[in-house]
Length: 352
Image (tube, rainbow, N blue to C red; front, side):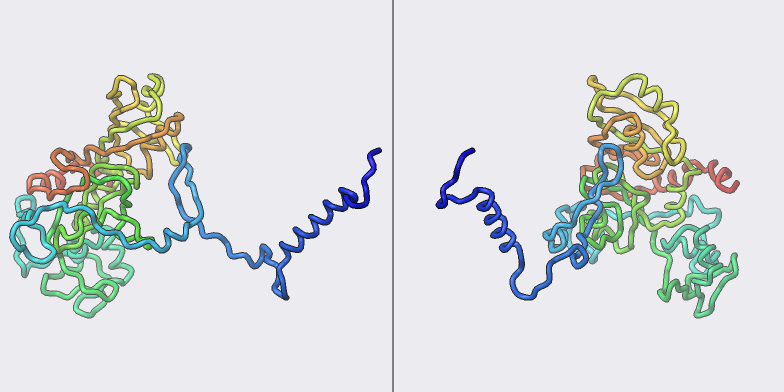
């Protein structure tokens, strides 16, 4: 056995010495209590997106994200000529929709209260009936719960203590870029689609439906609550066309299976058409009428594909032709009338 002299000492004791020194360094000085799991503050977590399996991914909130400056709008969707009115676009059209009404209504004519509320952009007529029944609407200071109650433009109608008036209808089409959230307000001050249409008109607008943060393409805006309800209701089967880019070529049997319909965790996802657009079979054209959340990405994830790019090229018969990315345009009168009559026969299916 190897002997150790007294100057070097026992190596096991030397190791204990280093261990004691490291323990002393880690031990807090004074009477401060040791930091335990109980008095540690929990880390803040936020939604980071979705993984390849389309499941949500969460991560810790970085300190720099909490202190970031408010977003400054980098786009100028409409070029202004001269000095127009504040907040009003030069290209905002005036719509004469009397052609699709049974009889033109004068200012003094009475209309049903639910239509008055829908014309103000609050909600659809059916949802307005629910607000009336719940006693959330007052007319000239009196609570109204009677369905079918009629008002004129001269009457003062209030909702949640605020006066509402029918606004001039506005219909706008945006070619959404990436990294913009489809919401009217975001507490984290991230970029939203409302920054892209800011200043387009004096009337307030809201997006119809949703596009993911990383999805580009057509997004429709309006203050017409009745039309918005129609375009988002599944009974009307509003068609959308997407250009889908996959991470790998798609197999022919998967194309056939998707065309027949895919059963996901929330039910059957029907596909109207699917076409392969590129020679490498990674770029596809998909036509679908379902409005379920992230439906396109979930369909391909079901077969083991990751959607690397998704662009909506058509919505409700409207295309993004001549609309550059990040820009918008107002619909013309003919396009608005077409939307009003779109899938009109489907209304019978909704009433059943």
